[in-house]
Image 1 (cartoon, rainbow, N blue to C red):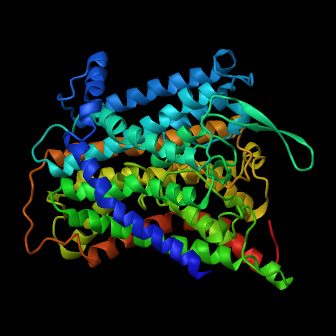
Image 2 (spheres, helix red, strand yellow):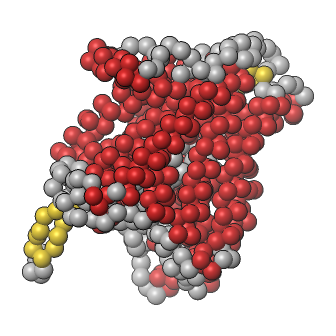
Image 3 (cartoon, helix red, strand yellow):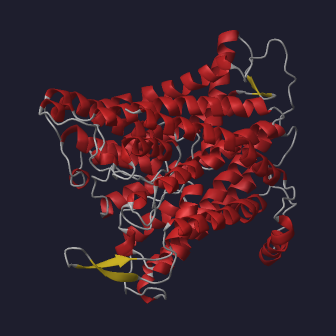
Length: 567
């Protein structure tokens, strides 16, 4: 480990904290439906959308109607993308004459992008046409991100309102977030990437002659525009198979830092927005503090393990950290930080191959996902997932002091606790059940490229990534088979929507309640004690649930490596 490495991590965390309030102010304006400086330019566009779709943005919806409209929207988008991929061979903007995607692969990809997972069983540069990349996939990077933020807004209203029957309008929330935040930010972001060296063209490829005299075809395309929303929307789906390790997607150390900041920017801003929505910004800062403390511990372990390297190499006199699978232009510290950022958020982007990390270095990205990606988390999904743990934390605190739990002015009763547990339980049930199934069936065992505990880690990581809507992989699993395409499709759909619906039910339940005045007997939810309790609940629930699986995978892999065997 080096001083420069720790400086990078410290600067990154400081910048995330600095971005939280400015981003939160903008998000709060959208949450309230207030005008922003962009409304003069884009207001007519927004109103045109509503007229075209026959939507009254002022007509609010109860949680059931909000959830129904959200689910129908996702279903329509899924079918649309499936059709684009299946018809790719006959659609325009396919200069390399790529074949259509098969049925199981098209369904897997459509579900992947609808759910903000962006899991990729394929190599983008050899499987997807420019039209499929832009119309079939990039469109979801915007809309799935906007959906997550819209659900977070609905939950905020549940806490902020009293004796209300509605939680907002899904169409208005989704439109405003897309039009006034994601789209303009990504236009500026894409211009920055283009200036930094990322391509943005409809040309298919160019031919180049290498120094060895070999002719090489270099694939091009609309890379910068997809890269911008891929990061800002915590999507992660790469234009190229190498993802953000590819110099066209991530040209320099500066773009690497900006990409990491953009992944956390909206998630950090939503914590401040939540505090503002409930009338106490200290609530938002407390949540962000808990998130960042967990994050710092995780990135510290990854950096420590990758900098330490392989003890077997040390015994052979080979000094240095573990550079296998990493870009030399980024090095160990930036690669370790990137892996922790993308798995703490629901962004499947990678600038190094997680399969090449040390056993414990690879365990932290896996564990980040298994926690529910609530450590800043995906746009919207991170904050509403963390608030579920906050409900459990005040419930536990209430049991300890013998009072009815309260949180930000609302009594937390049996209904909210049951719904929170139901939503949290979706992830471990899905991950562990499908991983166990794949670890015993021949079709599942045919996937891992490694044997022993490392092979099991590849399986466990795949279903953690799918159900957690992350999308990254250990890159050692041959997942482009009907078996894995099918099971991962199920995992992605369940992990996204079986969690969202209970969250919206909680929003509806809280909105109907009265506000409770804080008293001397109320448990404080803004100080260090509360932050510590939050962290403890998150780690205990995540740790106890997944510890057996981690023991069979990365922990066993580490212990075996220490004694000699490698997998």
